[in-house]
Structure formats: C-alpha cells, structure tokens
Image (cartoon, rainbow, N blue to C red; front, side, top):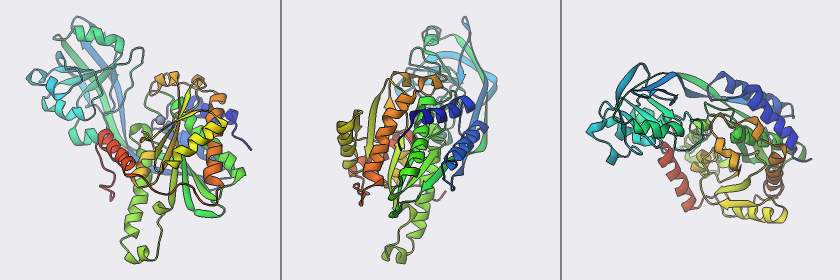
Length: 442
Ligand SMILES: [Zn+2]
C-alpha cells in the first residue's frame, strides 16, 4: 500500500477545477469541505465530519481609481477596506513603506501611495487621516493579491479605503504624485461560517496519543489555491487512505483546516477549544493530582503539510519541538531521498496555534519557481503534478510509518525548547498582533 500521486492529483482537481476559489466563509469553501468529507468517508472513515466555526467574511466590488491626467488605473480593492461607494478624493502622496518617518501633515486628506503591506502600520497611517491608500505591488509581473487588512489590525486600529495596483502601474502612478486622484469601492462585511474537515484513525496500542496530520484546504480570495494548498490537502487525504490500510499504533487525526489564508482561523479555532477545555479541567486539583489528561495533553505531535505538488521544486521541513524531529527527516532523506532542508523555525501555517499550546510540530513544504503565483489567480491546477505530489507524499508516508505509526514508543517527547517557543510567540506577536494564551475564554 503506497501513496498514489494520481489519486492525490484527482483530489487536487476536484478542489481547484470542480470548485475553484475556496475563500473561507463562502459557499465554495463549504462545497470543498463536503467533497473532502465524502472522499475520506469513502475510505472507511465513518466519523468524517465538518467542524464549523465563525468567520468574518469581507467582500469587495466596484473598485475604481482615477488619477488626473492619467485616467482610470486598474486596481483591486483590499479586503477589509472601509466602504467608500461615493468615492474619496485627494492629492497622491508617496510615503515609501508607510513608516512613521514618511508620514505627516502632508498626508491629511491625501491618497497615499505605499510600497509595502499595511499590517500594523495602518495605526500610524490613520492618525494622519488620509482619504485613502493605494498599496503598490512590489513584485513585477504578478497580478495583485487582494490580501486582507488583517482582522486583528482592523479591529484594533480601524480601516480606510484601500486598493492595490500592479507593479507595472506603480512607476507611472508615482510619477503623478501631487496630482488629484479619486478612489471608490464597495466593501461589505458579514458574519459567516467556515468548516474544518476531520476524520480519525484510532491507534491500535496507543489510542490516547493523538497525532494531527493536517493541511489547509481554503484558498485566498483570488485564486484556486492549487500548490497552496489543495495539493497539501490532497497529500493529507491520500495519507489517510494509505494509513487506513497500514494501520497505526497511535491515533492519527486527519484535518483539512479552513481559514488559514485569513490568519489561521480554523487551526486557531481548533487549538482554542482544546485550551479552553484544558484550562477548565485543570481547575479541578483532583484531576491534576490523579494524573488526568485532557485532549490537549493527549495531542503529541502535529504533522502539517502546506505547499506541495510542483514537480520542479525542493523540499523543506520546519521544526518546532525536539531536535530529533528534524534529525529524523535528515536521516530518512539521506537514506532514501528526496533531499530535505531542515529549518528550526515556526512555519507560517496551521502548525503554529497548536505549537503555541505546547504541541510539537513538523511542517512539510515543497516549493519551487511556480510558487511565485501563490495567493493569486495564477496558482492553477496545471501547475500541479502527480509525480510532484508523489515525491513528497511517499516520503511523508514513510516518515509517519517509521517514526509515528509503528514505534512502540513515540521517539519525540512532547517538549518545545525555549528558543522554539520564542519563535512561535514572536510569530503571533509580529504577524497577528495577538497572544493566543490571552482571551482563551472567548
Ligand atoms: Zn498555505
């Protein structure tokens, strides 16, 4: 019984061609979740289910940018923008990356040209009350990624009308600074629901040791999200089929997370529930004294698979936890190939929320030149290859079989070295402006 690249490719096709864009909270994402649930159920996972969670769904339409002397400039509205159906106007002012040293009185009422992601800079930018912002795409030849004004940033700092323009427009636009411009867009927001999909293979001898094998199945707003990460999801689902036959001493919980592209929404939801239960249970001193273990305690490891499927690519493994997680990757790669580069760093994906809760993680990625199209409409099915899926799929299968499913004792202690824990904390602080151990109650 071996990982079959053709089977995995068929799942990729269903997600990216049959469904297409799978932005979390949309009907398409729900359809994809149902397809995945039915696929895994067909392999004998009777418990396959959708796990819903709330998500803020932003949509943008009718974005329009006009510049005096230049006419209409093609642009994409940023998700989470302020709604500006009647338009805002002001002179174009170029403020480099939007750092505070470039901001000032001259920004008031202006339309700012910013050559970087807004992120938390939106706080400083809004202080000068500009009319709007045009984010300049810094990568040539790339269709704009709509990106979010992050949920956390929006909630904390507010928002403003914002669009993004292609790199080739950028130079011209900056040449027209000082001229008057008008920006309009319709930005809507509603509360919606997204769905993680999960199914479990109970361990034969150690059912109380849970290893999560996961990948995110959602895409960004713009594209079909093929290499990132219909392909990784397909690898997880094909592994589920294979291990159903091979069996495992430990419990393998297969999860297709959603909302990853909007800030790890699905995995944060999953980890939060575990943390909340854990905190509740441990209020009872007796529970602790008698060696009681919560579901979170029983989580021993996360194997996360994000970015896969390209034939021309190289493999990486990102480790949060015992160094042996990485050593095992190196050993297996040296023995059988393919080559892997091992990084001791927090992979920016669904591994992070569980690692923040104390669960070690190894993340597998396979990236190449075509990942250039990630998060755009260019990340299409044609970039994915059965052979590419199989190269890393078979490696991960053997890694799981050898080090997780078969051994009498899991060779990786449930420990995260301080420096790795620091990576995770910093990752959340920098990227999301939040600490997950705060607000566990909500
Ligand atoms: Zn991804």
